[in-house]
Image (cartoon, rainbow over all chains, first blue to last red):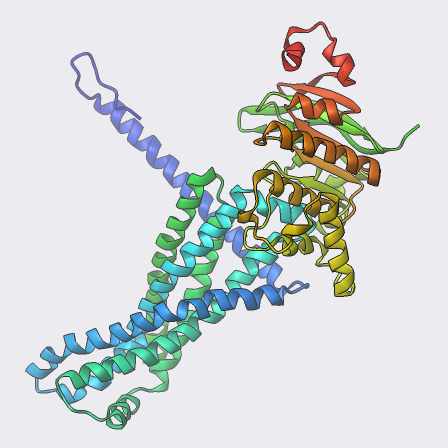
Length: 276
Length: 242
């Protein structure tokens, strides 16, 4: 909206303030509307997921696409993550004469925090944008309407299967990424040292406890659920033609990533409550 | 007297301040092809989407095969939808599936049927539209006309009693448009289906229509056969026939 000016070309401060206020109220209203719709969408998911018939074949297909097809990217990222973290941590630990703690420190960092979060962010970028764009383009080209008029529940077929697959597959990918990342750390340690495979992993497993591994994996179920839920919501409710496809893919990644950090913060608080 | 298979009474639908359908009334009788003619944005597509419950009307009643669709549960509506075929303007083929899978998709509830019988149904539907050769192709490998035909085959596979065509010839060259129009006519004769054809293509209307309705600003302003409407002394209606 153009800013109104008086005869001398100066901005009218009262009108400008009113315009800013109106725009703020409008955005606030849109924000709460969006939250309401997302909540309804989530409730609908829980209602549909327990109700038969179950789309088992589509679930398997989506698990293959979401899980197996994401594995190479997650594996490469995991390897680099472990390698880089080890190389970066070594000088600091060396200053304190604590280089022997390198495997344990890197392992705890990877398993508790870096592995799950980085993998989930990669997952949001690859899978979230894919789901958002795919569903939005199906909406734009009336494919979702076509399913509905064929008497098939498109929510169950498209949304429920994707959310369940993502929720199940992300923890599997994170477990794999953690393992590969630890192998990357082993390579990193051996770039400037000579530690055997057995000794490295003996040190790693000596320091890793159940309270490091378990919360790190459990939170990834929530990450996977959140990423897929937001991506499906953005794609399924897209309505602005081809422009909407790009927007759906973009906001799926942005909000999916944001939710990962919010959930991670909550998970850390919950974990620290139990570990006291 | 022929049975009424679809009926719309006092239908109103608005999107914000845009009043798209205003007190719309319509009747479709068994075995007839009803063409709904109107300019772009006159509410034609909204009208047929209201008929299958894709869009919920603000006011009015929609009866399909004797059932008021607003009173049906979603499961009952889905059963009714299987008796109503819908050909979308863009054909709306599922991009990630082959032609065969596209046609098998509406048959998912018939899991008890043997695979051979399902294959036969798919092949028969494709034979009806003259496209048996593309059964294993992806939709992206098909031309616009072929996509429309496959879309029509997918619509036919459940042997619907009513077929709704949303601008079936839009975006096609005159020859392919004529082929599609003749196909609509053949389907009506072969299966005795009742159809509503939304179009602004006069050649399609001439070939397919038993009866026509002209929509202007969300209201039906004229009704009659192609010949009757073409002879009307109304400048606006006449502009379609020029």
